[in-house]
Length: 81
Image (cartoon, rainbow, N blue to C red; front, side, top):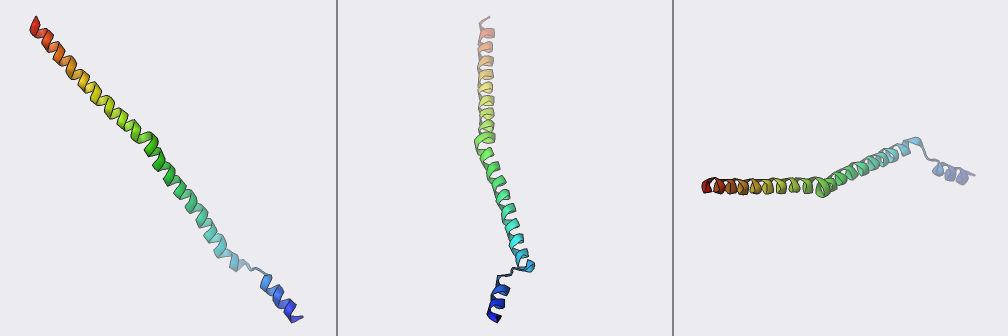
């Protein structure tokens, strides 16, 4: 009879044993979403923000080159007249 009671007592899970499990499980879930957010932000930077900035810079340099060539052309035309 005492063996049966000892086995039953071993199977009982107390709330105090579950608290650390729930606490660390919750931290793991929060950590997962935190890491997911950081990775998504990094991928957004890599795939959208950085190419957009590069295209903007390319556009600025092309506009600057066009403006310089237009200025040179207009100066040559003025010198001809």
